[in-house]
Image (cartoon, rainbow, N blue to C red; front, side):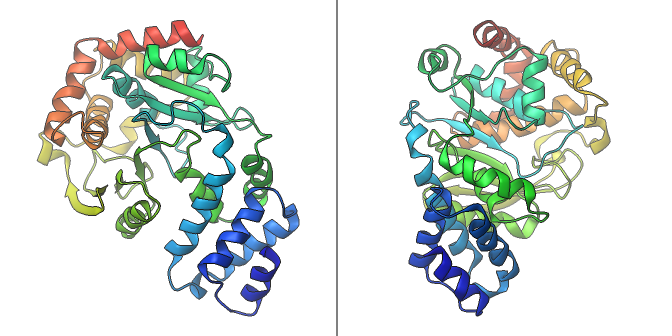
Length: 339
């Protein structure tokens, strides 16, 4: 089917949903060779305007990719897990994603993240500085998850989806559908998600996609800058995909009683400095830009998983988690188990 779809794209004919699903199934399961898969993805990029709706193409890709990683969805798949996603690699900016995971875990929210040991990312480097080693799926995962509400685990490069798409991702010089699909996937069926998209126009589009693929408890935002998180510098557009409905609104720091800071105040020079920033925050030695940035985004995360009844209540809970030392205690506990 993938060759049939390729021929249709070459002839400027839009494939139907069933054909697209089959084509993606063949690619993600490794039934098509890398050259064919690369041709398919390249044509999808070149023929973007051909599709009546890009969301249909993306939904087909996500469904097929989810099917291909079902084998490793064996870890507590029915628990209310949470994951923070990022559409951009924001190296040299404070690693708020890691800190938010700590804050959520401190409040009995099961937080999960999968790490690619064969790819160097900021998240992976942050873990290394704290001597936290992501687990393999078979390494007492459930026991450690129950103790800490925190799980960073390795994805094997032998799994079909990753094995047959990683080379394509690395070698194609342009952003393509695989870059986006990857962010919607979690091998443990994450039910609650928080992520930033690249433009304000994408916020509601991705909220609709979340509803179409069954993610009915998701917060999508754009802050108008490089970071995929709510802004302490200006306005953030937000869409909540919640129980088959979408709610959109805008937030500014002032609306929540917070201060405005320049984005550059979140930058660091090296990963060791990032570690120092995290430690100072959790030791109550930081009450500036990093503190406000952390409690703002943690408040949104606590709210979307319904640990807080409102964003303002989420702010109070995030502050308490840091100020009372609960986040620091959780970090120490995680280091003891995952070192």
